[in-house]
Image (cartoon, rainbow, N blue to C red; front, side):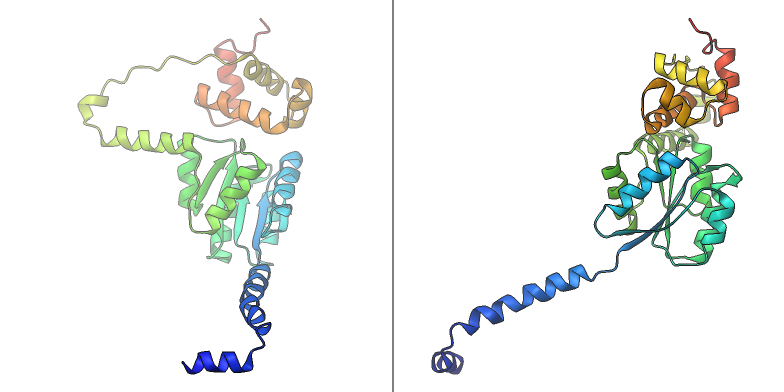
Length: 256
């Protein structure tokens, strides 16, 4: 009752809205002052690197701290500033991205590392996880999807490409199956490449880079990376040299 009386006597009813409006201003101020997610990337393909940078820099609440194009540069930049999220490609021109993952986990234990690569085979995935990666995505993501995966990783999730996850689950299923059930596995028939995949492999066999293949086919480098990933999966290989060798063995390099 006293509160009612005091409100009626002091009657500046105009002041009541002011007291009600103050908290939202404080909330919005605190949201605006929240520190951004500090991101760095290790990517040797210039077009992919630019796409990653644009996706991060245009996303609200994300900040690109640095970008490296190779293993040496990444290892040099790592100790300089703390990071929240590190995106790493595994196939670097001067070594393996696995070394960068291990160094990042040692330098910044709170940093969440996510692999962004064209390699979807279980060997690369398991090696990355053992090195300390907490996420594994392939280079066929859109900018919006990549940003969403970065946020998920920073929030404590472990983003992983569905196809990669399926391979790991199938591997676990096979390992857990009775010996009799897998003692005599049948050879899976080879899946033929699409016309674009075959053309991509032919250009790669001639020494074309991803950018050059993209220009020749009139598609984006990301699309070429998708073609390469599918070729690797169909041929069950892990490198360009293996893909070219196996592709030639199966007649994929012929012009007809």
